[in-house]
Amino acid sequence: MSPAQRPPRTRGVIALVESSCTVCMLCVRECPDWCIEIDSHVETTPATEPRGRDRSVNVLDRFAIDFALCMYCGICIEVCPFDALHWSPVSDYSGPTPTDLVHERDRLSSWGATVPDKPALDPAARPDPDAVRRSPA
Ligand code: SF4
Ligand code: SF4
Image (tube, rainbow, N blue to C red; front, top):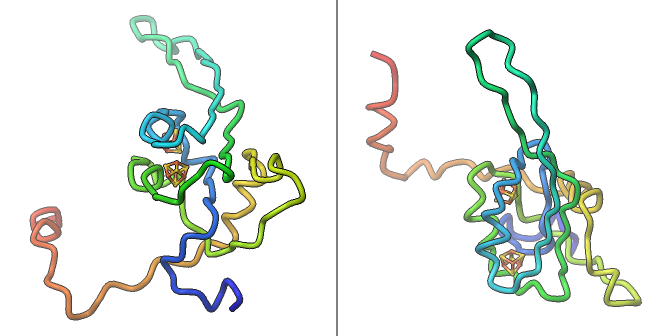
């Protein structure tokens, strides 16, 4: 079965949307197998106003997942507050050595093109009551 024919929630490989990652480290802390490694550094932008504060941002240096350790629980995807991780249905990424299963940020990002669109909402679902409260009057 090709990846396109698999069910939309198939857990194949994890895709990273690098631009959405704020290096909050939540996925690293919550992963039960400790198979996510992130390195980053802090960059500071000086304040632009006389009484303003300098701004600091975390800049991603390395993001790697070791799929030899991963148990495909999906916790990292669930806990990411910024939707930076997604399941791709692609499962054909083995290699001759165990290190081939360590995917660095470029490879993780490349899986983004294979992530299926979110399925449409079930038309029979109950309306979200919060959506009414959130909508402008
Ligand atoms: S799917 Fe589970 S085991 Fe794999 S990287 Fe995410 S949290 Fe860790
Ligand atoms: S939880 Fe999401 S935003 Fe935070 S470090 Fe992991 S991928 Fe990046």
